[in-house]
Image (cartoon, rainbow, N blue to C red):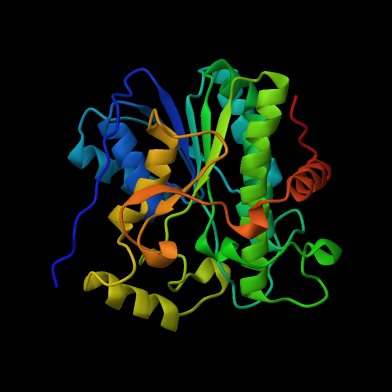
Length: 312
């Protein structure tokens, strides 16, 4: 069955600076490529410099005039986050788009970040919380839009307030859901706090649906020695144009949320087919776990305490 191709219109972004985490492969690479094609100056902070260099080469094969900067960033290390924030702030160039896209998913065994946090909570949420805070002066200067990438996993679940780091009993999927709920609440709270304080930063959230990316594939760095059954099934469905998306279509909700003049502060963007796992991008209703402004304020306060990063 031939797969329908989806696309969106992206405005000219010449003279605008974008930072995209997780841009060395998958959805992040697609986002960085599309931003570069539109003329943006794209900063690509990556954990693996070899993969990053390959990604830069791949983008330049398609767009020889692309403006790309490769930087080192390990979101599971707050010192690495601080180093990148210090470097970019010293450079002083305003940031107009920050797309918080990188993430890890369901390590089979509980792992810890360099700072002792459960890996998914520490990387997906706390690392991005700290990075956005470190870059806040540049985001204010660029009157930036921040788009934070969540997951369909955040449709259900809750934050394990009594054991945020899953030290008593680890469940990989529940911990993943928590990390993405916390991150979604952060993305919504950022917009509210910016509006109240006059930072000039807008913030929304997006999700890629389900696509055959490397999240569930064999990844030695998260202790997964072979592809999961889930990713094999996702690849099979995607190749046949059934239910789920492709890596190309999965980048579109974040692109819409970040660059569309019509994208709204505090909104969620994702694929529009039933179940929101595939299809063309568009706005959708916030999932129940993301509704509570009380939880959003609470996770913000906890995140400031755990990371030592205060938004000012």
